[in-house]
Length: 319
Ligand SMILES: NC(=O)c1ccc[n+]([C@@H]2O[C@H](COP(=O)([O-])OP(=O)(O)OC[C@H]3O[C@@H](n4cnc5c(N)ncnc54)[C@H](O)[C@@H]3O)[C@@H](O)[C@H]2O)c1
Image 1 (spheres, rainbow, N blue to C red):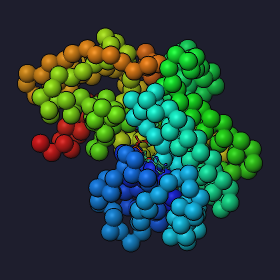
Image 2: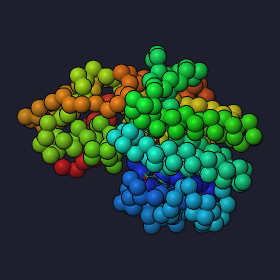
Image 3: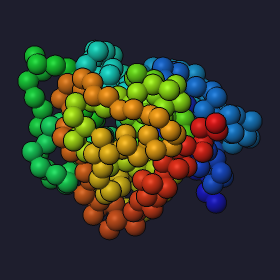
């Protein structure tokens, strides 16, 4: 049990809603703020009536909205900052909004944490490494970005990079800050439309009896991490007594090509075909985490294999 006063920004989104469920079940007082850009009340259905939970529809960049959340909480012990424009298709298409929400949201919530001397957990991303020169992604590796005149996809990775800079600056100012980088989280409520994430998109295409559309030749690889493991990583980063400035790659080390992923998902029904389409600008060939800091400092390791996670995902679709 735990009875902290916790603000979760982006709390009605995919990861945020599962994180709120977990924090509420632990006995914390939790307020979620979300603009509903991609989140929804339905994502929080299981806890909407809980005494120790409230959802506030507002903008993370707006200090009045943030203050209203703190008033509802009666103070602040911990912020999980997850609010962001996420969804790979947006990064190039809506670069201005991505930069505005992601950077200003991070600055405003860091200031809020400072004002209340609250612990701060930042949802960064492996995209903060840009188009890195080596894998697995390891603390201390250079973060490498391509020429912005070619495409603007790195509005997102760049915003996470600057977010990490702002976090480390706040550490120097004495704030307790932890940085979590989830690696391709998947699970129930993951967005499967054209602005969504690949596993949910493949399942959606399969349900709609469409071809599973693989970007490029599908040899690019990713490491997919089951939502409960990702939530555990956030909880541990926020609750454990670890030195300020910690950075944790929260990801499975099971690597799979997107073509093999499509083949595995195609097996859930008969007669599914796979096609090849155009990919996103600046998509990296591999995205594999080095999880040694997470293991050593948080005792965190992913526990759900991709085969088991895909089964869980399939059953969650309730067909
Ligand atoms: N899902 C992943 O695999 C993954 C990987 C790396 C990093 N992350 C990061 O983790 C966090 C959560 O990701 P997610 O997958 O749950 O994405 P998500 O899009 O489901 O959640 C983000 C939430 O932020 C909300 N939001 C957007 N603009 C806002 C604003 N101005 N004010 C308040 N709320 C706003 C959205 O409505 C959404 O509910 C994000 O910061 C994301 O960048 C996620």
